[in-house]
Amino acid sequence: MSRLGQHLEIHRVNRIGWLRAAVLGANDGIVSTASLIVGVAAAAATRNEVLIAGVAGLVAGAMSMAAGEYVSVSSQSDTEQADLTRERKELHDDADSELEELAQIYVGRGVELALARQVAGQLTVRDALSAHARDELGISEITTARPVQAALTSAAMFSSGAAMPLFMVVVSPASMLVPLVSVASLGFLALLGAIGAKAGGADIVRATARVTFWGASAMALTAGIGKLFGTVI
Image 1 (cartoon, one colour):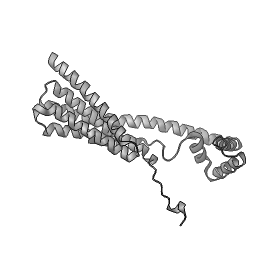
Image 2 (cartoon, rainbow, N blue to C red):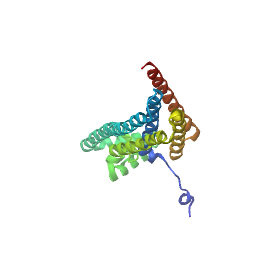
Image 3 (cartoon, one colour):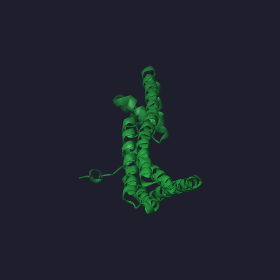
Image 4 (cartoon, helix red, strand yellow):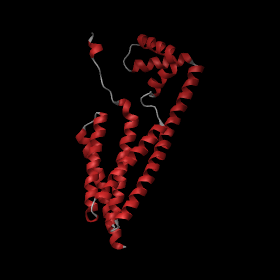
C-alpha cells in the first residue's frame, strides 16, 4: 500500500459552522443567565424571584439567539446567492473571459500559465459555477451559510448552558447562592472552553482562560450593579 493510502488526515474546518453556533450559544447561555441570577440575587431577592428571573432569561435568550443567528446567517446566505446568481450570468454571457479569469487566479497562486489554463478548462467542463464559487468567491460546501442549522444549534445550546446556573439556584442554600452560582458557572465555562477547543483543535489553555475571564467579568459587573440597586432601593 502506498504512503498516500496510509496517510489519513483529520481536518476540523468542516465543523466551523455548527461549532461556532454551539460554542456561542452555550457560552452566552451560561454567562447571561448566571450574570442575571447573580445580579438579581445580589439585590436581596428571594430564591423564587431569582429562579423566575433565570427561567425568563433562558426563554428570552434562547429565542433571541435563534432569531439573531437565523437573521444574520440568512443575510450571509442571501449575499452568497446573489454572488452566485451574478457569476452564473457572467458564465453564460462571456464564458471565455470567465475561463481566463479562473486561470489567472491559479497563476496568482503560483501555477504556470499553460497548466493553469488546462486546470481551469477541466474544472469548467466538470462544474464551472462550483469552480468559480470556490476559487473566485471563496464559497464552498464547508463554509456555506446554513441559517436553520445555526438558529437551532444556538437556541439548543443556549438553553443547555442556561440550565446549568439555574440548576445551581435550585440546589444551593439561599445564603450561599451568589458565590456557589458564580463558582459553578465559571467551572461550566472553563469546561465549555476546553470542549470547544478540543473539538476545534485549538489551544485548550488559551480558550479556557479566555472564556473564563469574560464570564467572571460579566458576573462581577452585574453583581455590583445588583448590590448597588438593592442597597439604594
